[in-house]
Image (cartoon, rainbow, N blue to C red; front, side, top):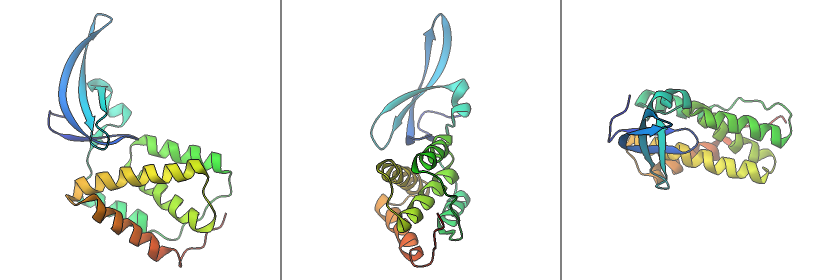
Length: 169
């Protein structure tokens, strides 16, 4: 699935570089692992190759997928179901953990819009920052642009939305 030197996205941690493929013996059974260095924080992760797809390890998105991400971010006609912040937090965390860039974009959009109507909890603010960071990193790699450019583009989407969206909570 991956080779040394490939970029891969690890759910909830972001874009990483496959630095090696190692064989390790655990309880007398040989396993093959991808050794991944996460670009954002230099954390090293070992992922069993046979479980890579199951845990959501995937390639960086394509140009057409980038367009889908921006379409999600620009969608303005969303309605929120009344629920407590902690239930919303759990649902959004589950979406982030899927590793889907589209789920990540949905979380970012929803939290950006929600904060226009009412203050976010501490956990939701932290989640907004995490979702933004993960999305910006992958979009910058996918589009070969600086993270600052991607951040400005995303923020401009939401600056334009603020006057147009009514949040029903």
